[in-house]
Structure formats: C-alpha cells, structure tokens
Length: 146
Image (cartoon, rainbow, N blue to C red; front, side, top):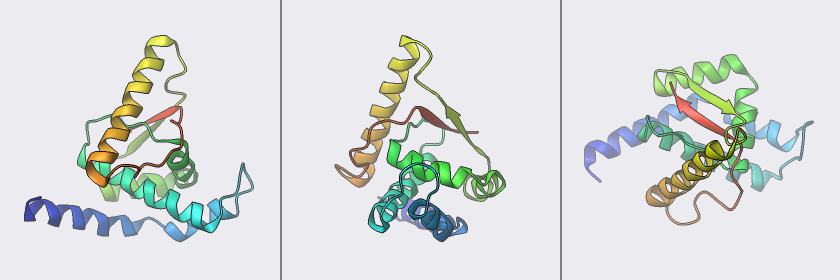
C-alpha cells in the first residue's frame, strides 16, 4: 500500500464518524421490528457495515450486494432518510441508492444478484481477509453509488 493510499483510507475512516453509530447500535439492540441483536452481534454488524461503506468508497462504480447482517444495519441507517442522505453526501459527495428486491425478478436477475454477491464477498476477502464478511446469506438488494 502506498502512503498516499493510506492517507486517503484513514481520512475516509475518520469521515465515517459523521454517522451516529450510537443511535444505530441502540436501535439494533432495542429493535421493535424483527429480531433484536445482542450487544456483541450489533457491534460486529456495525463493523462489517463500516467495511462495506469503505468498499463502496474504494470501488465507487462496482455494484455491491450486502449480506443480511450488513443489510440490517443499512436498514437502521436508512430509516432516517434525511440523515442517510446527508451522511452519503458527506462521505461520498453523492447519494447512495438502496435498490430493494434485487435478484427477485427472473432467473437472469437472480444470476446477476448471485454473481454480484460473490464479487462483494471477494472484495471483502481481498481487502480485509477471509471471513471478514461473516456467514450471513445475501440480502435481496444492491447498493449503488450515484
């Protein structure tokens, strides 16, 4: 890794502090919707979501499919549409687009969804090591950098 790359990466990681991680954490462990996460599960899911955001920043024109664990954090983040849009603007100078139900509209789209998820897993492993994305299955959505 070149020193210039490290500065950019550190700067992006610092920029992620604009996200209200404590509010996201509290919502994950005190959820009224779906399954509540333990404190440990929530912390790990948030960490993986942060890695996912980093990959979106590093590979801005690559479609990404999160796993269900990362998608749970994404849905908590996106629940406040204004904050999600503001955070996206601050982090990426644009908005992220969450496309739900990706992979459900026919066999061709299903194959693209599976391929995109496999590529996302590969990027996780190349950047963070084997197992960094966890074992959760693919979520039926994609995240686009707009």
